[in-house]
Amino acid sequence: MSTSSKRPAVVGSRWFKPAVFGLLAIMALLVVVLLAKWARTLSPVQEFLLDYPGHSDLLSGAPTGLPAWMGWQHFLNAFFIVLIVRSGWLVRTTTRPKAYWTRNNKGLIRTKNPPSKISLDLWFHLSLDALWTLNGIIFVVLLFITGQWMRTVPTSWDVLPNALSTAIQYASLNWPTENGWVNYNSLQVLAYFTIVFIAAPLALVTGLRMSSAWPKQAKQLNRIFPIEAARAIHFPVMFGFVGFVIVHVALVLATGALRNLNHMYAGLDDENWMGFWIFAATLVAMVAAWFLARPLFLRPIASLTGKVGR
Image 1: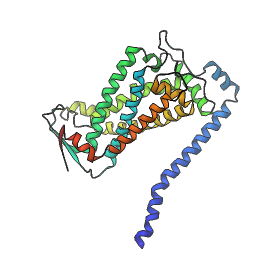
Image 2: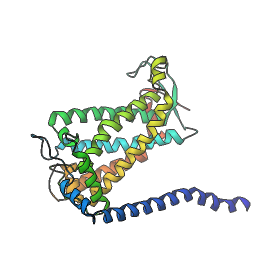
Image 3: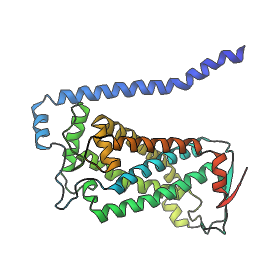
Image 4: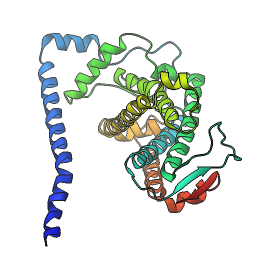
C-alpha cells in the first residue's frame, strides 16, 4: 500500500519541472509579442522597418529558385539529424546499454588506437555522424558549384539590421512580406549560415574529439583541446539544432505551408500539394527509422564492421 501511494508523487514530480518550464516559456513568448507590438507603434521603429524591410539585396548572378538536389538534401539532413539527436540522447542517458560493439581492425575503419568496446547506441551515433558529414560535404560543394551559396552566406553588413527588422516583424505576429523562392529574409540567412558553417563544424569537431578515433597520444593537441571542452560544447550544439528544427518547421507551416513545402521538396514555386506529400513521405520514413533504430535491427548491420555482444 505504501508503494502504490508513492507512485503518483513520483509521476507528479517527473512532470512538474517540464510543466513549469512550458508555462514560463509561454509567458515569455507572450511578453515578447506584446513588446514587439508596442515597439511597432513607435515612430523610430516604424522608420527603421521602412529603411530595413528584412532582406538584403543578392549579389549579381545569384540563382533564382531552389534546385531538385536541395529537396533531397532537406530530407537527408532532417533524417540524419533526427536519428543523431535520438542516438546521442541515448548515449548520454543510458546507464546499462543492451549491447556493445568492438571495432574490427581488419575492416575499412582503422585507427592507430587499439579497438575499444563501445555501446551499440554510440556505434549508431558515430555511423550516423559519418553519413551526415559525407552528406554535408556534398551539400557545401553543391552550394558553391551552383551559386546557391549567395543565398545562404551574408554578403553585406546590412544583413544585421535587416535580421533585427525581420525578428521584430515575426515577434509582432505581422509576418514580413517575402518570397523564399527568390531571396531569403536576413534572419533566415543568418540562421542557415550559422547552422551550416558554424554549428555543423562544431558538432563534427567536438564529436570527433570525444570519439575513440581521436589520437590519444597527441598530448599537446589534447592539452589545447581537452575532452571536457568538447563535451561542454557538443551538448548545447545539439540543443541548438533541435531549436532550429522546431522554429524552422513552425515558420514553414505558419507562413504559407504549401508554397514553402513546394520550394523545399518539389523544386516548384506553386501552391499545389506535391511538396506536402513528399514532406509527408519523408516524415513516414523518419518515424519508421526512429522505431527501427533498436538493437534487434542494428545488430546485423553493426556486425558487418565489428563484433557485437553484451
